[in-house]
Image 1 (cartoon, rainbow over the protein chains, first blue to last red):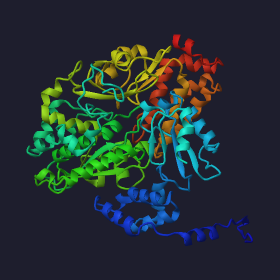
Image 2 (image 1 turned 60 degrees about the vertical axis):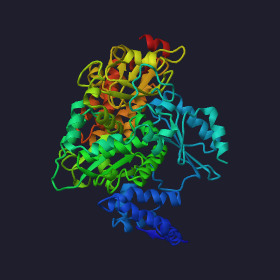
Image 3 (image 1 turned 180 degrees about the vertical axis):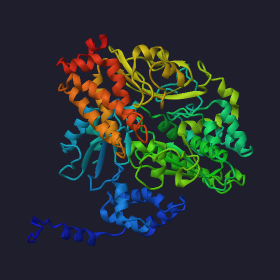
Image 4 (image 1 turned 90 degrees about the horizontal axis):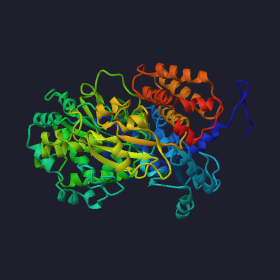
Length: 182
Length: 437
């Protein structure tokens, strides 16, 4: 595509990109997921209150929450996509872009920090071949991030790999934990 | 009960008795251990009588503020024609605190029962248990327990066949420390960004969905059942120091200590014996240097202060800190204090919801300056700047996250100034000399 000049700036090809992504989007809330949302709606006096649970369903089904996912939720709950995005961006657990097959969160807040959490982070970065926090490994399998207090300080260092919560992780346990995921 | 270690003989295990006992997690197992007897009893009482017993017991909020629970419940006016709500604050995110996690993953039915009792007492038909999203294991057990309780008719349209409707729902958070602040939790529950609300109106007047709401911590709600069964006097008698602090309290202990875990002791227990005897003292060859006794938001105690503390609401205040959430972070002489404090500040900067300027800017600048000092690039003027920022951040914002960031900075500079100055003057941190200084 030949870049067009808009207001003197080179226009990136966002439009075509978005269109392709949009065409590929299949709604999350059909059949079982729709029934699940309908049940959730009975729990609250407002539709809006089902927003966090609905976004969890999107993430469970798709691995992350895309703009299209937000738009779908917005329509179902009678909200605007902008509002939904405002909520999504507030919370750290919704992925706003695709992440590795195994999303690894290592707690490094003070209580874990004084028990050697930094070394656990380093071990994960090395053994997953990600090298850097927040970057997905070339094989698409791992993303490692530091997370603020996982609330298991007596079991330093706690690590979450997707939904699994692992206590008392030390650097030497890291290779085994990763092998198990194969 | 010292979980994951053996229970210590000096503990008083009321709420933690069944930690590690997998059978207690199931409905059948919980009933075998006397579960749901308190709810049964409650449903035959007048709600006002339940509130009075809890008032008389002296139970105070276990989430951090220590507000008298019975009094809070009494703010809910019966017969006002509005739906009432109960929120259970299970967004346990205060660094150093993990007692509610243990309560929920080992005794999930205790919380379902506690919620049902409290809901009935305050005239609510709906209770929401707001659990932080990272707590996958507590979420699993709580959802299972709620399901079992519904299936057995213990909660639902006719709770225990009483004709009272008590619905209990588990609501999963999505990663935000601030949602542990009661009004932010309600905003989040309504499907909004977790920005705390200006008070007043207080939740009892206008809480979740704009309706009268009571919000209690997990431990507080679970304590209600044994109080109903054993009476207010039984609970009130569990007090070794100040009569305003009654019952047992859970402490989650972490950091540089022999036996980290969740302990339960009677209010007023000597902190020195707690740290050295129950928790086993410092790691081999190390010495304790400081303690943060109530989660990262409370002032740091020197060992002198900690060892003189009697563990209750007043006792911690008398020794320069607060009971807070009972999250005891123990720091030994191998840890540079500036690094510890800088990391706490970074936590608050990350978790600020950013609606108040003092907090948004203050937490970020505090972190920047502390990290600069930590890296040996600070100046003496920085210490004054830090104290000035802390002052400007205190008491000026919608919620207390901002104040909380200033607390470790002010107490840290006051009690461990030597370590800050040493770094500024280009002296490397040396664990042993620092411990002596």
